[in-house]
Image (cartoon, rainbow, N blue to C red; front, side, top):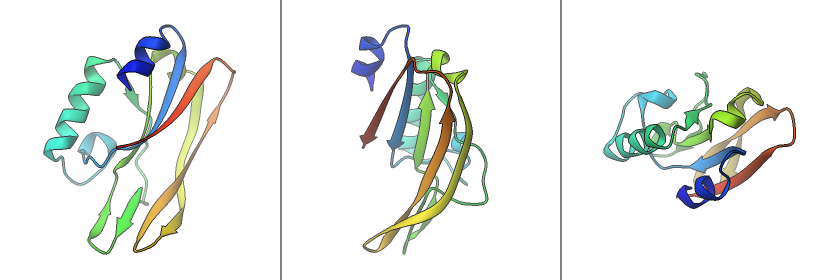
Length: 116
């Protein structure tokens, strides 16, 4: 993420992240150590969490449900992203992940999918 942020100075960036972190900042029921580290990183890079509160979680497995998948943007892209939603689930072996959608207006952005 850091390299993308540096490379894309002045351009809107949207990250779709399988963060494997939990935080009440992105509407989970708890904040774990990795979540606190992610919160601090996002703040230090002036990034914004786009995720909105929802009755659906972004991840589910036999061990429980959580909001570990994040949509994150910088200041430039914050004004072009909207209609964030998490809906149906995609089944992958013994776990499920939600399908997250959002709208983007304009064309001045970089989209990168990261898996932690």
